[in-house]
Length: 151
Image (cartoon, rainbow, N blue to C red; front, side, top):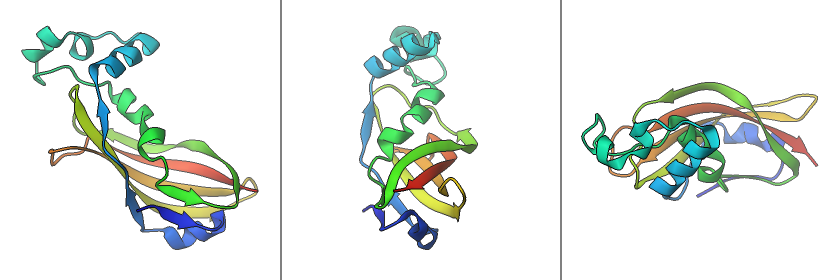
């Protein structure tokens, strides 16, 4: 279920509310594409044979790959009418808590933590936890800020 607001100013009333996204698979092809895009070719990401006997038992997604998927993982979780656009304003804190092995499914749980109006629009703070299916520990927790610019 999504968090819905008729206008960015209504997000004040959404503080403390959360929404959960759908499961999404992070496969080896995506890990390879991210490695190629960032030129981070560590064996723990790309060599399944060597990684099988490594510390995680399989290749793992780059932490920054998982973080970069936040827009995809949170898509539709916060629906705000009356916004001309929404832009990333920044990150206040990110913690990578557990690696995501290739083939794992992840999903986002996003909670609105703050909403403050200003000259540019509404700055909305969110705490997003990326869960790993069948794991008690999440992959990461990120405190993000988005700027909702009213129409």
